[in-house]
Length: 92
Image (cartoon, rainbow, N blue to C red; front, side):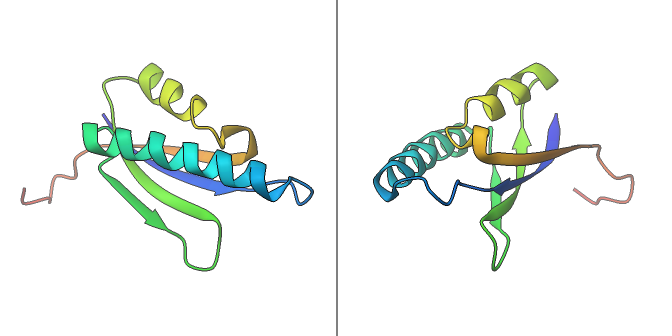
């Protein structure tokens, strides 16, 4: 099951720089692990914002929820999810 996921990150302005750097490093490692596994095949930065659009390819709605909820930056994100279906005109 594929999903288009938009993540918009809003860290508190008063968060200490060291704490922010640690959370970001943990987030990067977690997301790259998911990318290597094939669960997160694409991630695209939104130019000029601390945001991304990603494609996640998971087995269920529950797995998607678990992945998103386990993101270290989850408490600081606004997330929107769009379930995707194969388009009948796709030649693949």
